Length: 214
Image (cartoon, rainbow, N blue to C red; front, side):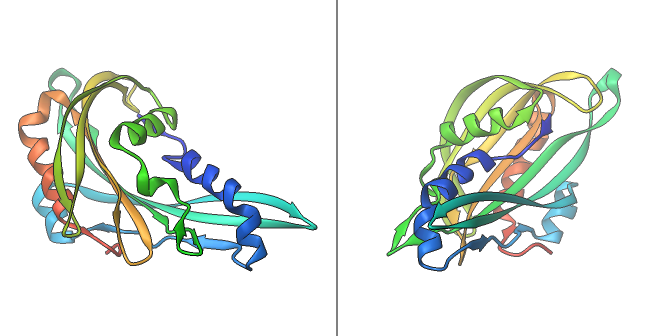
């Protein structure tokens, strides 16, 4: 599964909608803080932090003078090799922590990530990821991230790995929780055939999320 701009489209819409107002009050840039997972939890679950990626969304508004509004999101990605039998060990399990800045005017939140359901989040993820198809919702539940209770949904899908192999995968998506300045979403993906071990590992990674990447 190759990601293009995970959840960026939704935030880009917010930036466009708010651009005139933000420019008028001198707010032309919002930046999130990259979050991650406690190193001890990563070691326990076998996941390695592989990337901290800045995602920049820019919109230009013309309100008398041309002004650019910039929103900076962050993706912190963790990967793990799993044994897929005849295929061998493949980096096919991932856990991603996505942060997007709170955007507000006069106390009104404008970042749509805050109010998106798991179904809406997975739709955005599907549209922003190459090689992910046939996504179906399986069940809904609750999860705790950063000490906050939030909705968590399990989806099944087919994913094409970087190795060119297609496998059935499970996706665990949590709805947004808040950090001091950001909205935070987690996405765990692994091949369905290793569900017995990786479902618990994804739950542990969620519980181990920290506000600042370590």
